[in-house]
Amino acid sequence: MNLNFVDKPVYRNSTMTGVTSAGVPTFPDVSVIRKRTVLFLVNRDIVIYNFRQEIVERLIADGHEVHISSPYGERIDDLVRIGAVFHDIEIQQRKMNPIQEIRLIEAYKKLMEEVKPDIVFGFTIKPNTYGAIAARKYHIPFVANITGLGTAVENPGIVQKALVCLYKYSFRDVRRVFFQNTANRDFFLWNHIRVNDYAYLPGSGVNLERFPLCEYPKGQGIRFAFVSRILKEKGIEVFLEAAREIRKRHRDVEFHVCGFLESDYDGALEEYRISGDIIYHGLIRDVASFMKEMHCIVLPSFYPEGISNVLLEACAIGRPIITTDRAGCREVVEDGVNGFMIPQRNTEALVEALERFLKLSAADKQRMGLNARHKVEREYDRQVVVEAYVREVEMS
Image 1 (cartoon, rainbow, N blue to C red):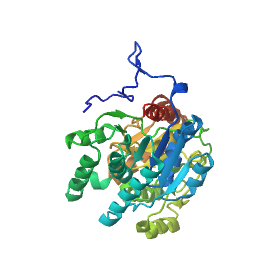
Image 2 (image 1 turned 90 degrees about the horizontal axis):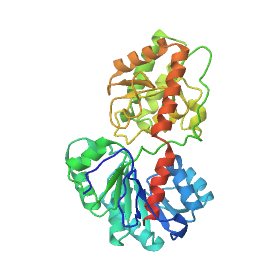
Image 3 (image 1 turned 30 degrees about the vertical axis):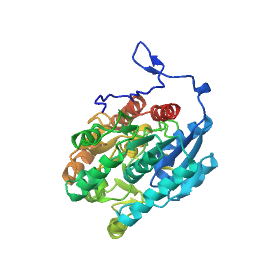
């Protein structure tokens, strides 16, 4: 097992031709490398469209044949239009039914037998574990991306033990594992989950052109926004409670919510909407256009994130952030520099952070936003991620 862990991806493979004086690996000229068949396994369309579209575009532009396996969603059509081949395979998102899980493994095996990919990329728990099992049968290189461990893996108990065993079994022969934060890497090491090699990526990165720096809003009134799936673990309850408290003191402050609404929160969100404490926008397609009208993006998450894409996107357009001191969120915020960091599950702390932000001058708020943009330019450019995946394909 490779026990080195660095801030940039590390690659060790027989296709390396050497290293530069700075220690950077060198590889054969891309023009002489044969074209590959690449298979992506994801659990929903937005996982690949919103956060990995640039990888797909680059591989297709380089002449590779790209296949995507996912349950159908509206973004699949956009990926097919740019040249990807789609395979509709259903995945139960939040349940573990043994019969359905076995069927999914068999579906992946059948797909790989038909497509005969040169390399397979997996994202999220089921595509990673079941995809790795299927790829092993046909001796296909498999690369997993740990985008977060999920609450079932993070919380101790029988389910965690079962999933650790699943990871141990499925990851025995994966070629590489990409981690997005050190906490996820440490979990694998502590639980003796074998990986042949691993590297660190800056989350999914952020497309600095799709999310350009936007002028900071002017005029009276401050708008805070929660942009995420409406889940307890994402901090929606903390956000709603804090919004109600702030609105008692500052009636001109607005709290906006947008994201996929889980049925558990239908009634609660409607109550806050009717009272005027929040404005709910539903699921939006153009996140950048929405965020640019906001003064600050708030994510009081205690969800097992990889690196929060919402926070990266907010920073990219130049908006300060308020988020929690937990893996996947703390990496993006520098307290007092580009936003504020608060403890998890703490409404009082969020209220205090919102008040701190409201007391800042307009110039200081804008300065925080600029600091946020500079941070993602330095550390989270999506092109770093794209190049890492291109290199994996070239080495297959």
